[in-house]
Structure formats: C-alpha cells, structure tokens
Image (cartoon, rainbow, N blue to C red; front, top):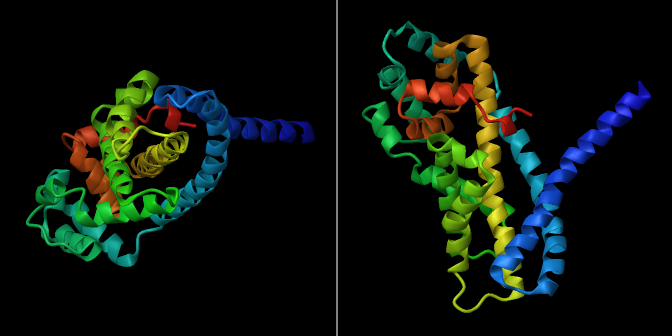
Length: 276
C-alpha cells in the first residue's frame, strides 16, 4: 500500500513537471523566433520557470475560487426561480427571455435587457471585460503596460470564443501556435517601437503565457461543472441550473454557440485535455 501511494505521488509530480518541461522547449523556440541570440536561449527558460511557478500557484487559487463559487447549492430563491422556469414548455432561450429570468439577470449583472438574445449580443459586456482585465493584471508581470494588458484581455475572449466555434484549433499544436502568434504574440511585439532586446523578448514570453493559461483554465472549470449538472439533472434542468448559478459565464459561452443544442453538445464533449 505504501509503495502504491509513493507511485501515485511520483506520477502526480511528473504530471506537474511536464508543463514546465514543455515551457522550457517553447522558450527556446520563442527565443529563436525573436532572434535574441544564444545567451537568451539559456537565460529565458530559467526566468520563465520562476515566473510561471508563481503564476501556476495563482491559477490554482483561481481554479479553487471559481469551482467553489460555481458549485454552491442554489439558494431558496434560486430554487424557486428554477421551479418556475421548469414549468415553461418553450425552448431555453425563450424561457430565459421570460420576465422571471430577466428580472433575476438584472439583479445579478446590473443591466436591463428586453430579451435574452439582446443580452447575448452585448456579451462580453463592459463589466465582464473589466473583471477579466483586473484578473489578468494580477497575474501579469508588473512591467506589463496598459496596452499589453488590453491585448491580453482581447486575446482571452478570442481564445474563449475559439474553443467553442473552432475547437479543433485547441487540439492541434501547430494551429494553436499560429493562433497565439497572430492574436497575441505579434500584437505584443508591436508594442515595442524599436528592435526587441533580450529582456523585451523574455517579457513578451511572460505576458503571453498568462491569458493563454487563464482562458484554458476558465473554460475547463465551467465546462466540468456544467457537464456534472447535465449528467445529474438532465438536459433541460441542467442547462437552467447553469444559467442560474453562473449567469454571466453561461451567457458568454451561449453567445459563442449557434443555439442551445450546440451549447449542450459543446458541454458534453470536452477535449481529452480537459478529461484528466
């Protein structure tokens, strides 16, 4: 028994070490891409490991916070709302466009909308963007400029949308690399007016890893919780529980989906990387 426990601990440590190893290899590739020389190729990985260790610890805290918030049992008033919504016979969007849910939505997000599709059209809202920007700012290196923080915020939502509309990209390393390069790395590089120095290249690496990791984490956390709701309560009640317990996050992903059926399909079929 003791030996089995030791093996499990060793496997856990190995799984945690693999991302660091991959990061080191990526650093060598990025340094070559930036053209910063052999000295940087040695220096960059070690600086990145130090930075990412701290970032991973913060992401673990974020994961715990998001999970605990999303898994809270519904309150009495939320259960009452759920009961009322379950009595409706219309489709999901029509039910969420009814006055009971719109009133609840106004209480939760602080905005009035005529119906649910209008709210979806406004997502991500200014409030969602601001909250995301603050969260990323806490994770980014202190040297990150306002322009770089804005680029990271924009990329975060682009990445979240991509995982819904073009999930094959996230499963293909080459396509994902190209996506990150076009939407994140190149815009970050454009924030430097002259030829990038060694420290500039390392700074871009530090900044780039933050929104990529955060977007992946948030997607995984909420999809896992929503999938559990669907498995326990069935499609209709499960989706309604998601819309009640996490209204803003649910609306974000619903806004990227063609319809409610596509949303459910997305929830029920996470990629292998999220099934660990």
